[in-house]
Length: 121
Image (tube, rainbow, N blue to C red; front, side, top):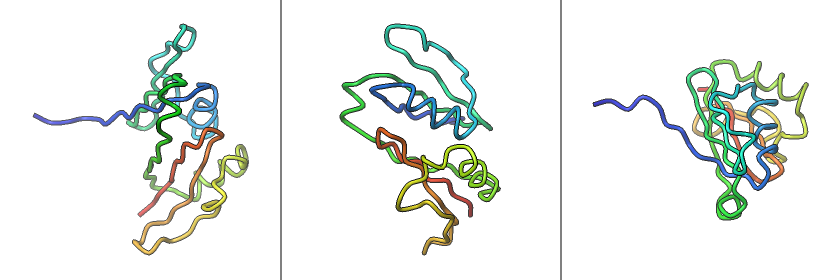
């Protein structure tokens, strides 16, 4: 037996906030699409990663996750974010910096409080 992928659920009161972060800013594409239903959701995919984005006010109010996405070119990701979605840079992680554990990182924070740390070892 082998596990092949971890797909976290991220809940939003307004799914458009999640689509802006993952689709528009980070360049994920919509795989599974149920965005026009009464309870919109989709799976955002990129480079073998997947995230289940779900509109649920109830669950969004209970948890605002922090995720790490590892890359092999943090400078390219950072430059893309700065040029297209600089407003999503986290106030406490808006520049690439080397952390005490040795990783280069910067962070994004969407309007709902979901934090995505971009990391390169």
